[in-house]
Image (cartoon, rainbow, N blue to C red):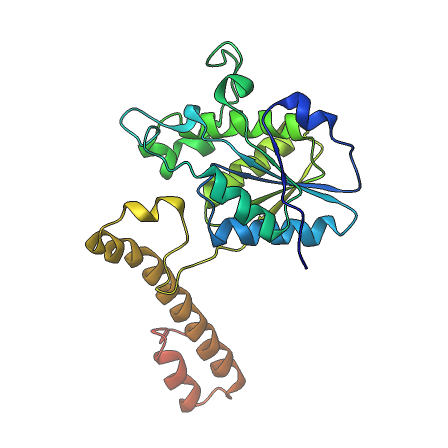
Length: 248
């Protein structure tokens, strides 16, 4: 089915002038869309239904980039983003300029991530999650969705958004969507284009280790279940011994 290209909206006034129909589902991005984003948009389309509306936001948020990070060279591909968003089922793309989101410059009042934002990625990127939550809060207010979808790839980000929505009583349902991976197992990311061949191999080590641990755990659970089914005999002792549980 041929879809009408999504409307490109640059201001909050343009967004609010749209006639609201059915359930509104929002997918927030920083652009440079790929299949991971397209999966989010397709999921939003399914959840919103044929009578609902899917809005994709495209905004490279300066508040979540630290000193020396890639704000200036972060890929900006709005024409391609509109095409991908339209094919995936978006009705509108809200792509505001910085002074539309932050009139008067950087905001003096921000959302603070608290202890959850100081761990893991937050430990090496101070202030990153404060900037992320601040723009998410603003975009939720601007787009006024019923549903907002985020990828599980950014697990800490998703956890923080859910906590903010709960703690600050946002009237929106947060939906996590499973990670989409490339053929070699690397999670899809707009920044993957920065990786050299050697860096890509290194990046794969984490997911490979996690999947290996998952497989190991599943194997151990299967052995435990099998051992529990065996009568308390030498055979059971041998099965438990294979797990390093000789004390049992």
